[in-house]
Length: 282
Image (cartoon, rainbow, N blue to C red; front, side, top):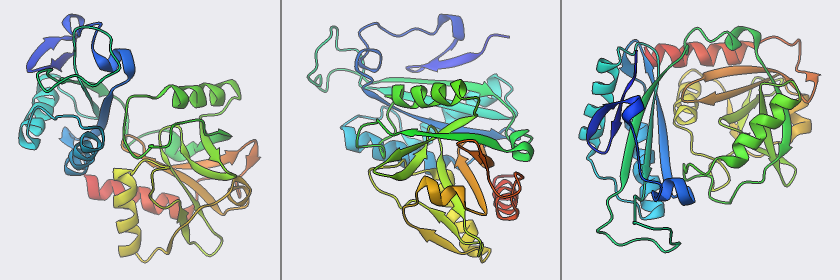
């Protein structure tokens, strides 16, 4: 069955979904995006994703052409019309089509381009929750405003491909000797006293919606937290490593750069955080 996708106010079959070759998202990656998980046919943490989208728009002087309430209605319509039970909705907002290629931002008369579509995938029963991820490290070559969720993801794609080439599931990016984040996730280590360590928020990492909720859930469940930088070497000697993102929730890492972490199995803290996060979402 063809997916029904949303393009600038219209719901169209995916093969009819088109934007201009002059769209600035296509020409300059002058666009932002969000991915919201869907579980049991319902949106997960929608309000957090909208707040981050609005922040990205403010940082780039982008105009969101619909209200948060309208945005939610579009999401719900896509879920219903595509009969999506579990997966995600991808949203992309670009500065629009200025009629030609020009580096300068166009005037207010140019309408932003808003696109959304569904993606069916297993989230709750992700097999990697049991087997764990194998991860490698690579240099972080991205720009210095990673807190803005832009579609300029070539460096992340290169990191994913680097991981694939080295028979790994993902890559942790390293800058100035410290892990920043994964190619599409936030990163955590668990110390031997069960303290969860994650990098503090800054321009260096994406302000993860799942991360935000996890830290609150950890605190309310008496799991110790520490927000600070950590190195790949410290991660190698950690009791556990895990990641979080909108569509993976919490997944364990069982090997880093070919070195097995602890006993090579998902750890107790990782399992607990995944469990309580899923309970919150469901």
